[in-house]
Image 1: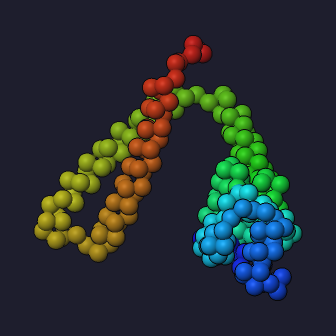
Image 2: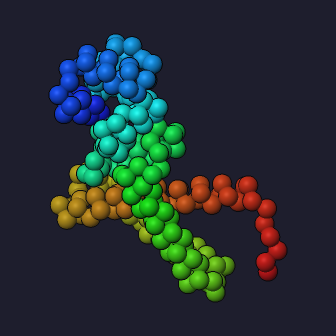
Length: 204
């Protein structure tokens, strides 16, 4: 979690907390807050709201993101929080760090669209119906192999007759089942969701 730098920035002015409040917060910036509120702002873990954060960042001549505790060494979580703060209006989109993040986000979105379009073009003549039939036949064959494996393994597990090599292979097998069962289910759920909401078009 980012920690605001207000206290550190205030110290660079050489003013005490009380003097900075009276001379800058109260008189120069006219932020209309009490000393207690300002003291809470100086606690690094506390959030400073949008309007005072803007005024303070302008006063110290630093980006708002820097005042709020962010820098160039951002974690993924930090980046998400900055983008959320931009959406909420806490950090302006022209803030230095926010601007860089927004540019990267835009570039990523553009690249994703390009990749999606390339994939679309690559498979535009793809024979879906035939390939699903092939896939179904492969699955049927896999089902037969799966049945043979379970019939071989089950009694030998009970009797503890599997060799060390067989146990290693069985571990690989169970890992594959877990991995691909989830992949297949997620894909099926995704397709079914779209199929249940979209109206088919007559493209035959």
